[in-house]
Structures are given as structure tokens and as C-alpha cells.
Amino acid sequence: MKYLTEYRDSHLVKAVMAEVSRKITHPWVIMEICGGQTHSIMKSGLDQLLPTGLELVHGPGCPVCVTSLEMIDKALAIASRQDVIFTSYGDMLRVPGSQGDLFSVRAAGGDVRVVYSSLDAIKIAQDNPSKQVVFFAIGFETTAPANAMSVIQAQTLGLDNFSLLVSHVRVPPAMHAILGSPNNRVQAFLAAGHVCTVMGYWEYGPIADKYRVPIVVTGFEPLDIAQGILSAIQQLEDGSHIVENAYSRVVSYEGNLPAQKMIGQVFEECDQKWRGIGMIPSSGWRLKPDFAGFDAAERFEVQRISPAESAICIAGQILQGLKKPVECPAFANPCTPEHPLGATMVSSEGACAAYYRYGRST
Ligand code: SF4
Image (cartoon, rainbow, N blue to C red; front, side, top):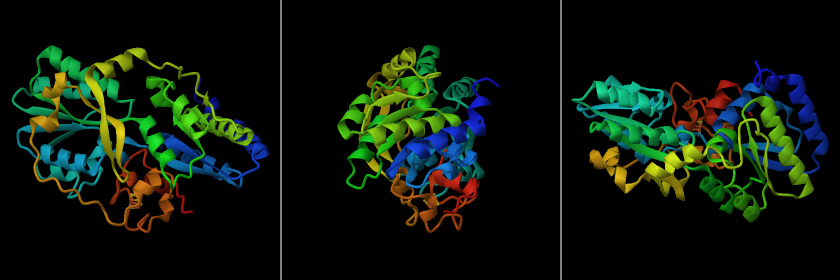
């Protein structure tokens, strides 16, 4: 299959990684931002091909993992209401809140449904006019355009029983937060190709300049990631720090302008809490005042949220590249995908789930 088979060709991947081995003369730490890239690395065994001295650390680009505990608890409270049909991506149903998850709400009688997009939730709202339909609008720049479109569509249709529980996050402020931390270990980034498909990569130049780090826009197949690593290593060894696009078959500098326009029409920037990391300035999107009527957090007053995170979960440090999943004392026992203590063990993009699924114990 074009653009798939050849990007999984193990001979080509090994050849690129051999070139990485020839280039490298110093120890370096590179962060792949996206959890989808983390899973691809583990699944393909790319981590086993890294030369001595090169460490990959896993970034916060897993939307399920970084949705704040307060927001999960809010979702549980809203989903428990008799008058609500709560709709969500499937991954979110097992994410632990302070007390239970959306599966346990469903088991207790709540109407919690899995959908593929907010536009599915619009249809459910049309079909159930006597119910309030809430969509859990989580995610990065990738999911925001469709969620913005659903609000416009609900407004056009005059739907007054549809709303979003919004918890959107943005990548560039998280990169600032990681690089600006006194504990930072990251010396180069593989930027998330799908986020850049929407947003382009014009936001990354100032970050590369300010912190003097190479940033390589990178795809998701093993050869994409190997090429991203090679570009980053070349820059690190040369002492340069520019933004390169190693995913040019998909990503352009300016990105998808209609999608960006749609986001700007409906959302505005806000400070956002990231699970395990804390508040990052300007790292989220919320509904603009003109669309406040579609804000589930406003529509349903949720009282007495006092989140309580697992005391042993170190997901926050993993998402900042400070630790690896196997350094968590709970990894694999008692924390497993069936009985997760933290969101990074739940998500199909979570680093802990990737290590568990692909049998990495070191
Ligand atoms: S293994 Fe479980 S408890 Fe440990 S960091 Fe990962 S999600 Fe948290």
C-alpha cells in the first residue's frame, strides 16, 4: 500500500538507524511528543535499534492522559445525571477519576455512549430531544476543528439540548513548559505530525530559537520516526537548532487554514490544567463567550469537586520526559490496562500502556 508498506520496511529503517549510529558522538535525549509515536516506536522495536547514548523520552501528546482529574470528575458528575446522555471517545471510559470511571457510571445506570466524533453526538441530540446530550471534547489541535464545527452545526440547527464539556490542550505551550523547567532533560523534539497537519509548524520557530533545540516535524510510521531521529541527531551534532519538516508528504508550513479558522471562530485560548503536570499558561482552548450556551460546565452546575490522584502514579513525570514507565513501582503490578491507576496506562496513546503492551520491562 503506497505510503504505508514502504514506511514499514525494516531494511530501510535499519539503514537509517545505522546512519544515526555513525553520526552520533555524544549522549543525547530526544522527546517524541505524541503518544501515537511512542506506540509506533514500541510496536516496531525501534527503541531496540537506538545506539548507545541516544535516549528517547516520551512526551505529553496523549490527550486522554493529560485531561485533568478535575475534568474527569466533572464528566463523571454530569454523566451520572438522569437527564443526560453523555458521549465520549471510547478511551475516556476507563480513565480513572477520583472515584470510579465512566464505565462505572454506565454500570450504575448512567447513559454513557461511545461515539467517533462530536458530529455523532449531534445526531444523538436530534434523535433524543427530551434529553441533554453532552460530548466530552478532549484532545489537541487535531480534534478541535471537528468539535468547533459541531458547535456551529448545533447553532445552525437550533439544538438546545447539545453541549460540549471542553478540555482542549495545545502542544506549543507544553513544549515551553518542558523546556523551561529546571529539571528539563530534552535536547530535541520530534513534533507531532498530525497536530502539524492542522496547525502547520509556524509556531515552532520561536521555540527552537529561544531554547536552542532542534524540532523535527515527524510522522508515525517506523521509517518516519527513524528519519525524524536522524534529522534531530544531525542538528544536535552540528550544533544547529532549526525546525525541519520530515513529514512533508502531509504537513505544510502554514497547515490547514480552514481548520484553523474554524477553531478561531469558536474557541479562545485559556490557561489549562494538565493531569500530573499542573497549570500551563495559554495551553488550552475554551468556548468563546458567543458560544457559552454550548458549554456543559456552565449548563450543569457541578459542585464539590475535590480531586484525589493516586499517590503512587508518576505519570506526570513520565509525560515530561523525567522518568520511564518501568520506573513506576506500580507498573504491571498492580497497575495494568485492566486495572489502571493512571491515565497513561489506559489510553491507546499512553506511554505506560505502550511499555506494557509491547513487553518492555527496562
Ligand atoms: S504504571 Fe500506572 S501508576 Fe505507574 S505511572 Fe503508569 S499509569 Fe501511573
